[in-house]
Length: 311
Image 1: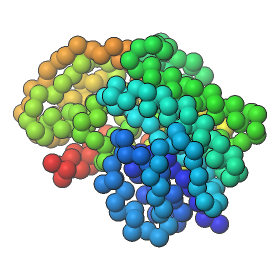
Image 2: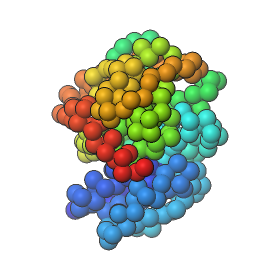
Image 3: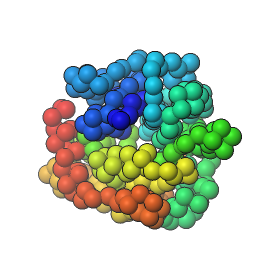
């Protein structure tokens, strides 16, 4: 029996790739979106499928989906520093109220619930790489706290439903991901650098560029997410690429791949910007048999080509 899956945030970067992959597997997908940061262009092609249904709705309100649901994937949320600076209260609400509503719907339908959590639950970490057992170093009242604490609360609520109601839950802690359908102005390193390089503008590196990120191509991430969904693992699992790069190395690589003549300029480091970010994926390897496959330059080439076409 093929599943019927609800994806909140279905028109976002990750939500649209998940919906596309599930449909390609023959599953039925219900997409839910309010378009605060999602884009209809990301899911236009999905409407051709008779197995795709769309509901325009804010998930912080009461959620009603007719018919059965086998899984609820809660991926609705602003997810970049620029987004949650512009939408601090909606970010908190979707992490708290939206998670509550989505959990309630999953409970009512007898569905598996999956939470899209984040490496930001670790904050500006004092250990590197970050294992799932690390509790994090988060400033709850800083500008990034609206996102970090929303996701930490969402994890706590998800585990409360698992323990109290016996629900099957999945918590995926997503590390830095890149690929087609990212927004050029969403404030994250890869789309920023690509957009600037293609326009011949200076590539903006914050701080001295020594802070690190670990970049996972979107198809690898989706594979890890769906392996987790299909598992019996109720505790959080890191999904990301453990290959760590400095921000300066990422900028230089994109500059080379785009053949851009742009200069690299430096600006002050934003408040509470993480100095290191690298997943320990021991659990994902052991429990899911997952590890990333797409080499960085191959993934970046695909992403650059997408942005060329978007110009």
